[in-house]
Image 1 (spheres, rainbow over the protein chains, first blue to last red):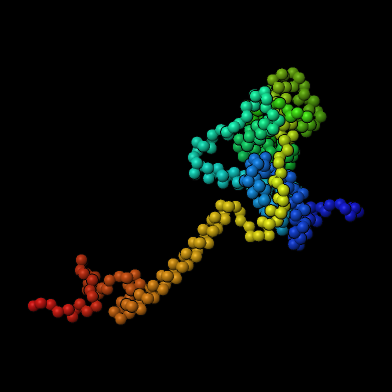
Image 2 (cartoon, each protein chain N blue to C red; image 1 turned 90 degrees about the horizontal axis):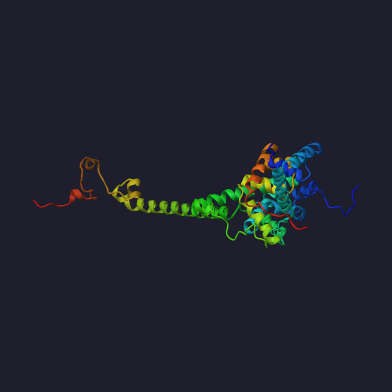
Length: 192
Length: 151
């Protein structure tokens, strides 16, 4: 029998949330906030958009808890929602940009990009460089990089989240790494 | 021999089975270009894994619960669309009401002249069957036959 102080399982929190216990849902949000933040901010970058999509991810979870059958772990289910919300947000944003800004602006380089060859590049600049390079990837490749490299999910877990075969995950990761070959050619490993 | 880049990444993370990892390491020892590629991917993987994404900020759970407990909208764009739809429905209902009232008033005013409901509602000039065959004929007034003419 687990000790009384042990935190309740996801399943127990889901059941309590469905019974109307707001505190149980708050515990779920606090438990998975970090995972969702890593996924959403990895996909969209920090800012108001990521915050909004993060909130929307949990709202969607709340609305769909009645249909959650526990076939996948709650974390996997939530990550799937987060990725889908990010892809939806990116599609909407791209469509808006095409309509109101123009195709040429979409391909414009990001301003103030630090030079990867600069000798005095700080650790923070290098992290920013990595983040920018990842966000310049096509959305499908970006989602694989975020899940495999940032979230450190396995190939099979990533495939389950994205709903694609493991071979697709591997080929997308290979293509993403090839795309990043140029921008990050001289990137040093992080200082330990 | 080319090696898929995802396998180099898997090797750097220790995800490959021992026999596959040993075979790949032998390839790396024999191929300096492949070794350089491996080291680049490994450094990039370390950098990504070490970069901790910032959190959403304090009181994130409070903001989520506030949204869950309040009527939710998909996004600001969806909220704007909902607002437009709401305004349009109200304006449409008001317009239909105004049309009904004006039609009723027109019908009441035109009733003494024997005009049809459609003609009075749309404000059409009064016509008679015989005038339909006359092009450019002026519309007939209610008592045109009685107008005296100079002989």
